[in-house]
Length: 363
Image 1 (cartoon, rainbow, N blue to C red):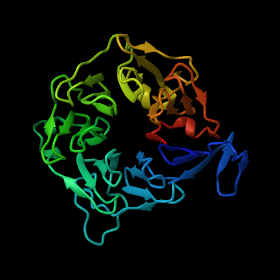
Image 2: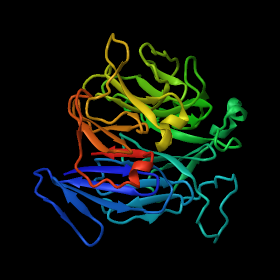
Image 3: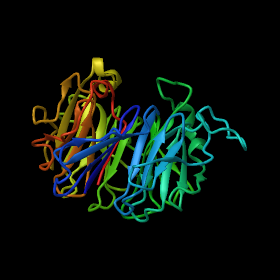
Image 4: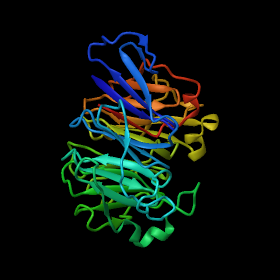
């Protein structure tokens, strides 16, 4: 069964497809719909979602971070969710008090599950802090020091300029102690010792990192799609290059790398934040870069782009050439890494067309 967890602004779309497509076309009284073998169920409706994470090593477990209501976990493949008591710092900077209601104090902006051990989960918050669980989310410990870095006074998130957050977390696939952190906005930060110490702003790194990626077949390779452009590193984040030729829109957001080819990269991009995130102003595009080539626009291949389309979020499954894209017009899949796309046959309401997606996991 293929599973896609699509975090929209105000709900999680849990989408499942039987491998033989035998689920058929129907609609249940519980709000589930199924077409062409795909079944969609909406969960966490009304919450302000920020991120989603799941691992094929734990097929029944899904994590969802929200801005005002903390961290949720499902242990039944998205059928139900429970809020976790984490003790994370409030987004206003205060500590939770014993016995106080948890509504409204945890802003969980990013999540990552270690590829080395699916019981190890990382969470990034607003304000910018990193937490780790080693027991599948039951308990959490802060990896201190991120908010003590020298450049912290220069970090800010423009819509809320007095704060900032951890937009992305990535665990190195070759070394479980190497952690990569994207601060929105202010710095690329990394650790080589499991979060005991942190280094920031290495040469050539971007300041407004939105999405980070690594490659399971290429040690030391890191990629970033950032508000100030694209960049990549070949030495575990110590230094960066900024290949921009052909990239006409440089407010980058979505990012995917072909599991079969570390030189094949897709990014979704716009001219700025407004045209990336706001549906009635949206004008976003998709670009692809291959080994030795400049960026090329891959519009008109089946994935909606251009006017009225917000920036897509992208996700790979580990299969060569397979990539999924999610935007305000639906969920799409390509098996040739962007040459052609087909829409996943799910009911898509007018309300969803007004939203910029927050995250996507497919497994």
